[in-house]
Length: 92
Image 1 (cartoon, rainbow, N blue to C red):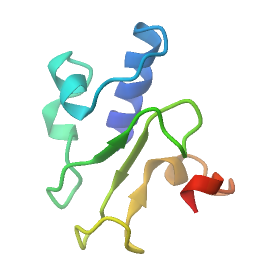
Image 2: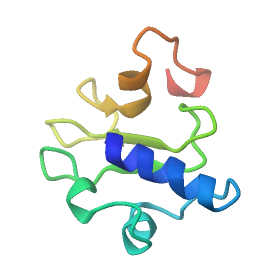
Image 3: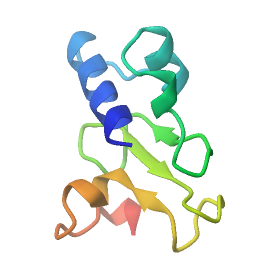
Image 4: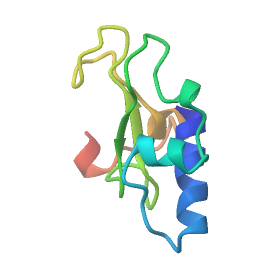
């Protein structure tokens, strides 16, 4: 997830703050290696840009081991970066 978050941030720097259309664009534009487009359980990363949870960056998350989005085992990149920060209202 870190690679996807970093790739998105670099894309936005290179494109005057414009968001990539998704993970596929990050891959096709060589910002992200395809091996970093899935979580450790083989599920495609969830990507939203602009993000609601990670400030001016994209939201990148994983559905976690159960592979179902919206369950307690989901892994959210913005929480890994700042675990002690309160989540944005849209992310609670």
